[in-house]
Image (cartoon, rainbow, N blue to C red; front, side, top):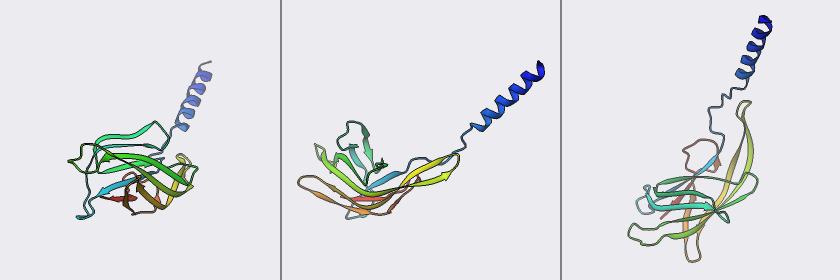
Length: 157
């Protein structure tokens, strides 16, 4: 009986060790969007930044100030749109609303057996616009992979 309990305890230990997930890499690829001063070509800290998916109530960002934001792209679509609002200038009293439209090609990438697959994206184009204004957007890096702090788009203000 003691041998049976010992064998069962060792078996449970091996099962628990086998279930350990040793995935130490990010399993989601996020689009990095930086705000840049078009005259000085230096990063700008935007005030009252709010970002949500177009046609979606869930807010992805709602921060008092940000230089760079990281956004998820659709896993199985080739266009992702975000509703973006921020104070265009520090002296402004009301936020300006824009649509950020990103055209991309998603493709799965096997990281390793423990982590599984991550959906990477290749950016084709991006634009930030509203009814009266279009801002310059540079596709700085086309490959959205699971590197956490990469900047892929630069928005010039």
